[in-house]
Image (tube, rainbow, N blue to C red; front, side, top):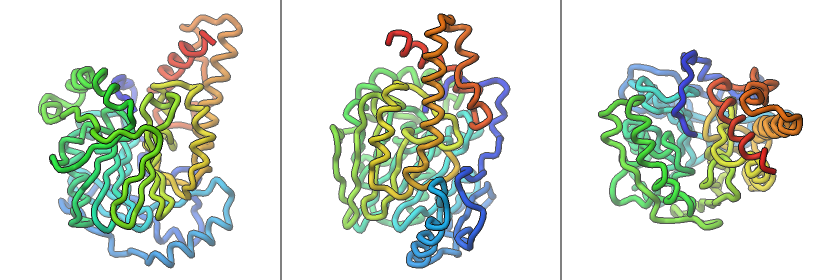
Length: 368
């Protein structure tokens, strides 16, 4: 998600730790759900209340059976690094996620606004995205080390936006960077601009550490990475959707999907690609054989494919409102404040991003 237009009225403190609204408040499975808050403990430590895999899967099966398709699971256990509130939640056996804050990037949060993933195999580890600063990347690397001594073999970037790639330099020269086949081109086009744009936001010292690192392993359509007894299915999506280089990662062993910014929960979707392309990708995305998805932004994991429904509705409203106003001959400047306003109360950061989404949609659709 691209973050360069901070809204002056945004405080960045709005209910960042709420469940996505699809989560159920009932059932004993809630005893396995741990949300995290900032503390002063400087070490990352595994929560001692870790349920067995068998009990979690049995409970989850019973829970899902009793709920509507919109229900969603939360993480089973959590680890927390205190000084920055950097927490890592266990989603399934070997799958972990850090849920970034639902805020705009600023110096206080150090760009810790995107969701990041860790997948542990028998032989090695893969990291999915690295956060919005090298500081965040270092916390992610420390989280990996708190979980396992196995080497990080792959850093997988789901797209080019700074909140997902600025932490890459925290990972050593022995890792292989992986991305969509369009990612090197996008980083080459935008990397220097990102560094300039975020220097006043993050500060000179933070930007001085950032390195724009293109992937050396490119995904054309689908690629399988094997971490040792754990196959990861990487899918490069087209046409342009959230961006022109969207990549997802499916852990075939657990059915956990790291969806990158092709999935937003509670955080309003951000359009930097094509609204028509994104809507065309969603039905194919929904066919992935996942059971749980980690969004690129949003405070929790959710059941798959029900997790897509809010995003699909928003993008449909964005598209339909734009087409209606174009057909009525409403000029862009007058149309923008009217597009998708029915969605306003459903999303965090709506006023920060909906105007730009509406502008992008109008620019795309007026030439249909």
